[in-house]
Amino acid sequence: MTVEIHGIVQGVLLAVAALLPIVNPIGNAPLFLTLTADLTDRERRSLARKVAINGFILLVVAVFIGDYILDFFGVSVPVLQVAGGLVVASLGFGLLRDSGDKPPGRIVEDESQLEAKAFYPLTLPVTVGPGAISVAVTIGANFPSTPQPFFDDAISAVIGAFIVCLSTYLCFAFAERLQHALGKTGLAVVMRLSAFILLCIGVQILWNGVDALFGISKPHG
Image 1 (cartoon, rainbow, N blue to C red):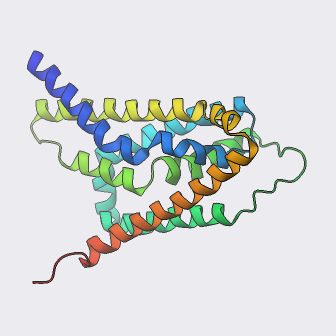
Image 2: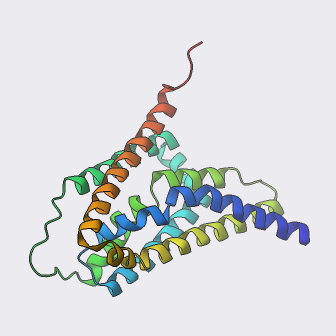
Image 3: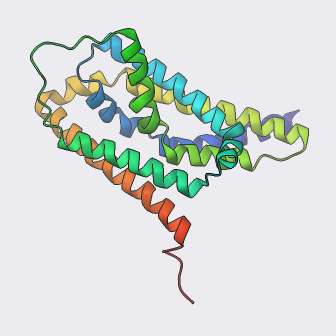
């Protein structure tokens, strides 16, 4: 039993170590603020909770059946990276071009609009993008076939995904503290920088997919 628990703990740490740097809750908090600038703190916390739940579901689905879904549609991981990179880059480019000027007054969004915003773009591709999905698919594809090791690895992956998404909720739910600390000018600078970084991330994901498809970076012998 002690050996099994030790194996599960080790698996959880590996899953968190693989997913957390890519999901990057702390780095994405300013971007979350950018995309929810017209919302109240209460609505922002509600969205943060929904993003964390959506992200957890996406990661778990990717771990357990992501490989089968890609095979069913004949889509490889590099193609997923190319398509996802284009989406992320276009979102970052759109935010970078946005003047940031808001019309007077606050635009009130109903529950259905907030639900839609919670999934796209806040969950996919901002929080759980093609990079995180690719890693989750890889984790699931490496599960052993024997029942007990499979069960241990599956539990580890689920707990790891939960920890990552809980961290996402905490960083997003209290992102307004960053807003108050930076002030209007400082927040505008951070928003522009976050949009540029998102554009760069999208280009990097796109390049990774292209490189995997065509082997551009491989040394020619």
